[in-house]
Image (tube, rainbow over all chains, first blue to last red; front, top):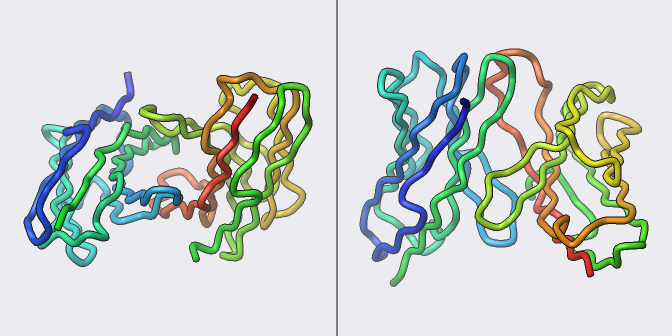
Length: 111
Length: 116
């Protein structure tokens, strides 16, 4: 069964601290793994897309990793800012072009 | 500004009403999508259009009717909706839907729909 599971469901951190969000995926045949950021009241915005051959990709203070063996991905946020408060959604895409979305991790950054 | 504009941003309608959601993309993309986002649930793909042709209908009830007159515009016509249809409806676009496509989807900010 194709599915994507994210943890934790929610997270609160202090401004300036780092954090890591987790994603376990069962997507077959695997094509790519995506991370999106969704601000409250807005649509999701793409952060990274990683294919099978990539094990890390960065976008500013966001760094995603991919372990194809364990079918795990993580999103690391460095030196968090208040504007990082959002939901972060992990998405697995199959070779048949189907996308499987996680339920997201709600991150709150407090001053 | 994401390049994908959805109107209206909010819509309240009764179960017997007929309304339409509109999506327009200014990115020159060839594929457009409708998604439903409900609280604490993953995004649900509803419809996919590639080069104006519908390529996917994810068992969506007939009370939702999509229309794609050209590659830049997408509509979702609504009639006799149910309370459980209350959700955020998101439109997205991408360059195309080619197999093994690694292109990002660009989302609009959605229409928040409430069914009374």
